[in-house]
Image 1 (cartoon, each protein chain N blue to C red):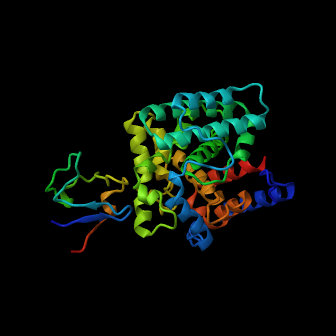
Image 2: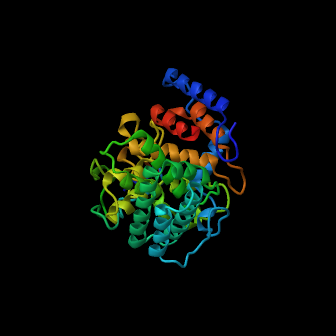
Image 3: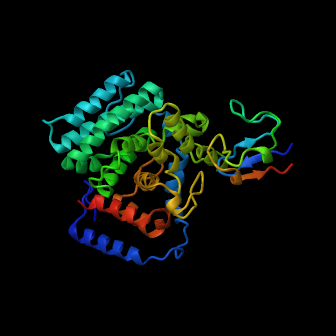
Length: 54
Length: 315
């Protein structure tokens, strides 16, 4: 599954892991994250994330 | 010129005020928006915070008592703030010194109890700033320029409350005790940053700088999760790195999207970063910092709030 990275703080979203201790379960693709989802580390919006080139 | 105790002579005051009037004619977008290299260095070093956060010793400004409980440290601040026997200068120094001790302890042990007591102490300091103009003016002058996280936190707290006092003169819609708590605690989230980055004794690389950017949101989370502040006041923690022109972080807010508390915190934060001395650089004199902020960074701030900030140093 495609990985995404926060441009503000470099937090990596790995869909295989989801976000532990949150409602985001393992296996959730980035596109399925809610519109108002924010980076767990820095609070940036989804629009601040970029696709990690494989 | 600015004298060593922070006062401006009349001719400098006159020059600065006339330059500020010229700000009304500055159009948006006619400056590069990029501060020059020297300023970038000052700000980068502030944002990266190399080296000092783990250091417990500090120079002028107070004695370190890590073994005192947060209750004792809080009482020391409150006692100084409520003193009716000390001169304004003595009182300011005592309040500042005890505030440094308290916040030094807080960053070592950021428990809910410590945060609660810190908030209580800040309440006393805010009351003092609002009620005692002479001591408040002295408090602006005694701030140490040694750059440690806790020193910076106290400095930004003092600067922000003094600015808010001026901006919101008498308006009861603002709870300045709550606001002050947010200002003093705005960088608490730095305890969530990787210690290897915080303790690095040198310039941070690009990745390390990015990791530092978690601290506004983490400060906000700590304050909200421990139910210590209203959301409106935790906003200063969340937004103190947002910029008027949208080049800040984490949300890249612009202009009216930024709460006025965030705008106040931003100005205080940048000013303290510029005036702070580090092991590898001297801090800028106050007048120079204000000049840089006005001439090279003005698009980061709301002009009216910045003009009021400058006036704090004309007394």
